[in-house]
Image 1 (tube, rainbow, N blue to C red):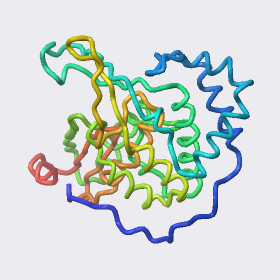
Image 2: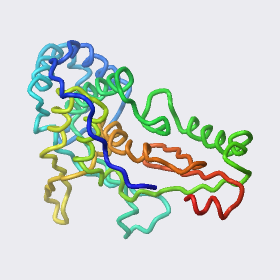
Image 3: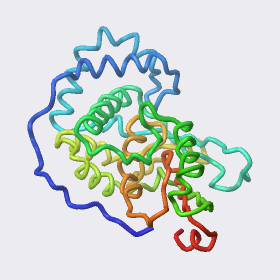
Length: 283
């Protein structure tokens, strides 16, 4: 696959202000919190406490989030996450790859993340450009079933005939440590390419600075590590920021007869043609 960089944005930066509706966004985020039962972040405050206090705190919290959006500041306190390692089955316990790193974040910060994520999704769907059609992960009204159906459509019947024959080769790309290695510069460039409004680019840019994870040491003390890349697994903004940063890969110019299907970071390349050797050269 040819290496590709983000093209220059073909629009001027806008600064038309911040749309109204933070209160509505907040109520939507609280409703989502009601149906989830997740572990709390470093402050120890569970989501249910935020739900119960939402009526009393609503106006104050709305004012806080509106001010944060206006200033382009994501509260520093909400940038600290507690690292938890989840064991993956079937891998040696002494191997680093046997564990999935999940970051537990304060529920208040995740409420704000959902407000930002909803506005980002509305922009991509309404103004765009939206994510590449080949991406099925972390998107509304799309699932693994849709991705599988897309693969089937590309490997059966008329699709194979149009590809030049009855041979289909598939190559699955395994991106090691994908979410933790996404560069922040790539995300920032992608936000410009997708014409994301200035105020959202500012708040996402601040969200990606001064991030810290804490984790227990051998003697029970808590250690801190500053982050310089990656999107937190366990966050609300992590999935859409991964999609927007990885989108350029799915927009690469592919040879004739080669297609791509993606679910989050799981990427499948399919090559159709008349012979095994011809398809092998394409991939």
